[in-house]
Image (cartoon, rainbow, N blue to C red; front, side):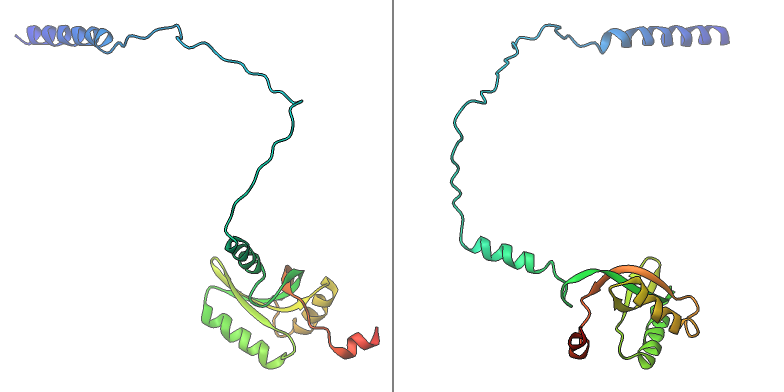
Length: 165
């Protein structure tokens, strides 16, 4: 009895596998009914004319978008800042910024988030040498201070500095 059931199962599986080959076949043709069309470009033709009709307000919108390229603080240029502190806690970063600001009111301090840390960066220096000078002053208070390249605000040039040149 067991032998008969096993033989019947093998026979049905064999028939099923052969039936799938013919049951899922699709007819297809190997010839394409469309002929390819090849056009050559004529480079000796006359240049064309294109007239653009637009609303005058589009220029105002474009000027508004370009104005947004500048930051809220003004134009940004390549420069250097001193990274004095970074931590995962925003509160601790704000405390370090406040501590710096009480001691050095002539320099601006910035907090930004670069996952997973908040960074406290100070100053707007055009050259790395200027940033290194501040870093040497800060190294006793902030031992992990390093100079980093950054986009900076244009530094304010005082009249006394401008008059000396």
